[in-house]
Length: 129
Image (cartoon, rainbow, N blue to C red; front, side, top):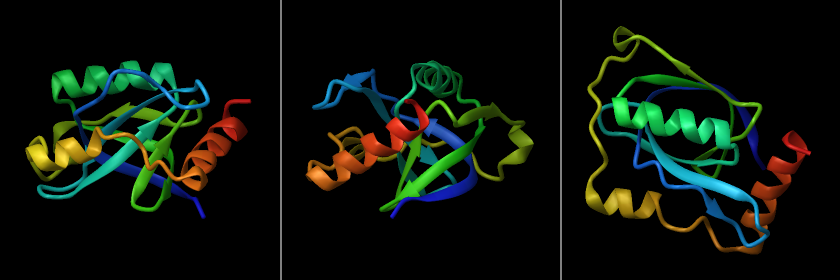
């Protein structure tokens, strides 16, 4: 079951272009670096957040994701999520893109099981009716 998580601070890497799900919903994927060696897959469902994610990825700016939902070691963001720029002093590690094998996994298609796809789309539908 998905659970609401307060926030996560770090650097975004490998932000994908907007893609279409099997149900024709826009989404993107990226990686959130939360320590010198920890990366979490992020799935986003909001075009405005996608633009902000691309900007933070390009500039290497640290950020805080506020109002994310976590499930199965993935973070889900939508229009209710805020992407807030933070100062470099708010993180105690340097931005380092994930290794190639991790990057390939992060940018792969979301889990293809019907249950995971339905859960992500239901989560998005509740927030973005």
